[in-house]
Image (cartoon, rainbow, N blue to C red; front, side):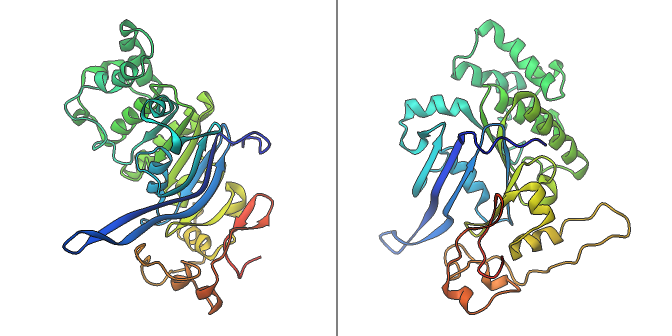
Length: 328
C-alpha cells in the first residue's frame, strides 16, 4: 500500500494525550484514585494514511479513539485536526467537525438501533448535517449500500435481519454517509467470524483507496493490520511502546512487547513456525501501573534500571521509534 508523503502537513496531531477515569470512594464519594487508561501519548496521522493502533485488551486503544473524537473528554493534552484544536471547540463547532470525523464501532449489532430500518440508519446523518435534499436521501442511502457490497433492497430491513458481517457493512456505510475525511475503525472485525474478517478488511482497503480516506485502525491482532496499514503504533497500558512503518515493524520489530505480539501471529506457510515469546502474568492494573517502564513486570529483558527509568520514544531507524532502554 502506498504511504502518504511524510512532508505533507499532518491531518491529525495528538500531543501528550491523557485520559484518567476517576475512582470515587468513601461516604462523600471523593476521588480516591484514577484509572490511567491513556497516559501521555503523542503521534500524527497524515492525509490518506491508515495507521494501526494495536495492543492487548486493556492497553487503552479504544479510549484513544473515543477521546480523539471527543466521545470521551480528555484529562489533558491536545488533539489538532486540520490544525484546529478539537478539545477547545464548543458544541456547535464540534458538530461540524463530527461530520469530518466518524467512527466504525466494534460491535455491529449494539451500535445499530434495532428499531430503525436501514434506510433510517443511513439517512439520519444526512438530515442531521443538512446534506443534500430530502428527496435525494433515499437514493444516497441506496448508493451507500451498494458501495459496501449490499443491495438497495436491504433498505427496508431491520438490523436483526442481517448477519454480523452484513451489519458491520451497514455500520461502515453509516460512517461514510457524511463523507468524512477521517475515520476511527474501532476493532471493526474482532466481533466477526474469521471467514468474514478478511471480507471486511478488503472492503475497508478498497474504500480507503477509492475515497482516499485517512483512518486510525484499532486492533488487538497484529496479523489483522499487516495488509491495510501504512504505519503501526503499539500500545501497552496507556503508553506507546513502538511506532514504525508496517513493513519495518513486521520485518524488524524492536521493542520486546512488539516481538511478543508478533510471535503469536500464525505463519501462513506449511511447516514454518515462529519462535514463540510467552509473556508471563497478566497486564497490570491501569489504576496502579508499574514504576519506570510499564512493561517491565512481564518483559524477558527487564533489569533493575527498568523499575526506575521511564523510557522515552527514541529513534532506532528511519521513521522507527521505540521506548526501551535496552534496545538499539
